Image (tube, rainbow, N blue to C red; front, side, top):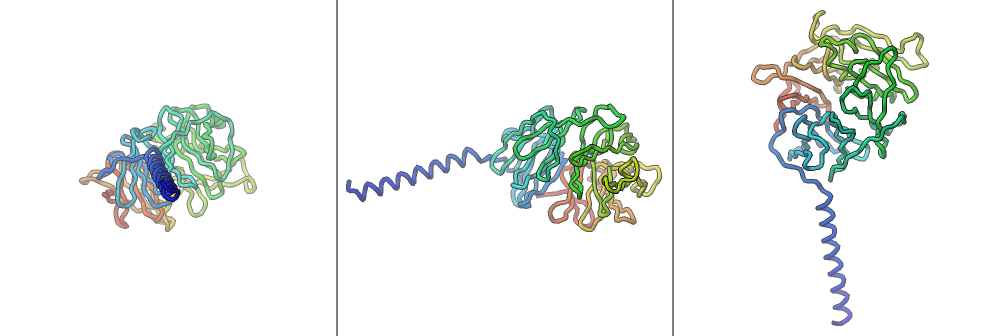
Length: 345
């Protein structure tokens, strides 16, 4: 073998080995989900990521990814921590996080290729950084919440609300326009954390619900005026320390009354809310459809299957302003401008 033939064989061998190694790494790192034709029935939460891919979280069959063409289902057999999904969030790098209400103090993280599990570390490291992510803790009346700084998942214990010692869960988390974090609980009210102190709203409408307190504060929304709605008919004006002139940091207003205009109504509590691109407020009830409030009047949108009201859970606004519903037993619904219709791939 002459010198030219030798070097040619060496380059060819190196090239082939490099291709084989690359293929092996790719196979080991990429999780392939199951391609399916339709969503499961109990799609409770909807999320659209920065790449405009939709994620649908169920309470029994894991999570579904839809890129506009293909519907893929991921479950525990693919590395997902739990097949019940209660919350979906995304970080600035595009990683997707799935939170489950389970006994495990952990969260699933998906980087587009595979799932990893973030295990929480008990801590008293309460902070408020703009880059932090906050997640609901597993249910069980623990009074805890997660804070994730991109490296460590901290398991934080709340201080007890003033004059209250009831055990409680965190049902909702919301970052307001000033960067404060709000926590909606069951059954001790709403807490605002500004990075230094905890301030609580413990009014009757956010602690004593008509169905024996089981509902909890599942929804927190800030409207275009900066006022807050805590899944009741009341509206709260909230003040910072520089404008505070009384013992309370808020004023409560009886705003729209019952959503249907009736004084005594079962619509005084709702499960979820969102503000659309025209600053209308949308409210989701359990068994009485969706209600829109434009600041003056209320419009009702029934959501039915074969003329029977279906049980709703959440409402979500996507990247283009489209409105989606999560339901207990009927998949996902999307607003077509006139009514909510069932999503079909």
